Length: 134
Image (spheres, rainbow, N blue to C red):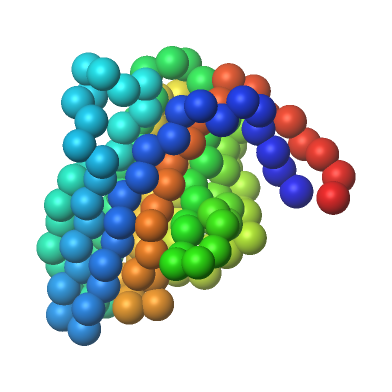
């Protein structure tokens, strides 16, 4: 299991999928005020379409993470990165892909948006990544 301490830099997006529409909303934080941001704030698309959630941080953190939090559950890791061109799978990866071409950016792609992906999406960053046993 992967853990990163501390986790003070977290930003969230809600992804709501209906048979024809997808709505993404992020917390209304100005990029000037936040160390980490997610975009877009709102996005509408058809199910089956490709959707990209952008995550950017301006703190030169090596580690970045994407989580999914379903109602009544804790966050589950989708993908993480320990640096540029370094990505790894988390607990739930089917239908998702990531890339890390710059230290600042870690986009999450929903390859074919479906109603099963309705959830709260959280992006986090940390200066270091610590591995620990379960």
